[in-house]
Length: 306
Image (cartoon, rainbow, N blue to C red; front, side, top):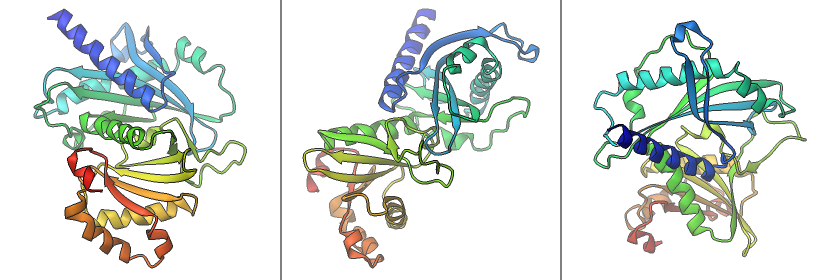
């Protein structure tokens, strides 16, 4: 039983390692063990599966320190996941408290320069290998309450639905836009204004995108010399959402893309194309709406309709 649990855990860590490589976090430190320095934790040691640092492209002079824990099971998500989630959450929160003052943490960040603030952030991957399980875990945790005793800046959670969304979006972009430079788009936030450090796009996925329902990509097609803004959404196709995404694409693009692609998980050309025309007609600037196409990023034979 112990050997099987160990094997399942290794599969989980490998899956997350491959995912981190995909989102530009491939230089993350792995399997860090360190001493507990808080009596209230009642532990001797803590562990982190991964630890990654980067300077935020969305907020000037902020260093993000991402403490990553992987919980992977061959069993389905519990019908009532709150109790198990609290254990996973507290395990990560206590690890963050001790790691932020550890010698290992100091050594990792010692060579990083040009930041005035750092944030200690937790990222919990709670994944299941059971294909019969529901995958949308996060809504079931909305009413969970935690103690204020822990010292961290924020904690994010990734469930099966969330990791599948980001993975499917990126894999679809890589498959569709061959011989292209695919990067994450970094919009103006009002907090990333220093000209010498400002980046409009890059290979690192900001932690803020992990739980966002929208993933913005910038795609430079080398053969055609065109630039595309691709907006992926985790939500199913809806004309109201499409109108909002068209408005967002106009706000984000500011005339730089040659094309704009809005991608839903379930868009169907035969069933939804008339709604796309209606949504576009709301916007008076035809030169803008002519740039826009709508697709599904979940490939099947219906994609041949496009």
